[in-house]
Length: 91
Image (cartoon, rainbow, N blue to C red):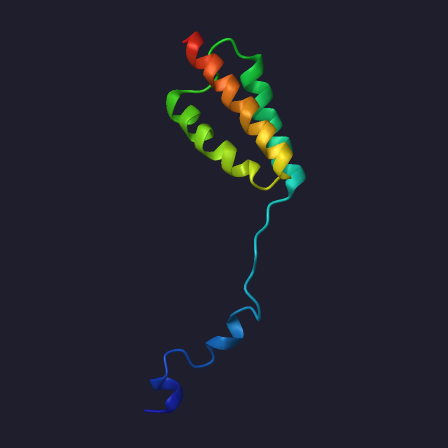
């Protein structure tokens, strides 16, 4: 048996990137998405999503805001939370 046959990872190093790939969302795209969600909530008289989707956005919206400047993120979180409370009362 040759060394290459014995070594299961022989030659695999060339397939891996030289540096780890980092994913950083584009703050402009994040902002657009969050503002669209907030506009949808503001325009609604009742919860515009089913309960499962609403819970999802209540979790994900604040996390997505982390990619924005702190002051802007805090304001968007506050606005979204206020809208969700308003819609919850309307139900």
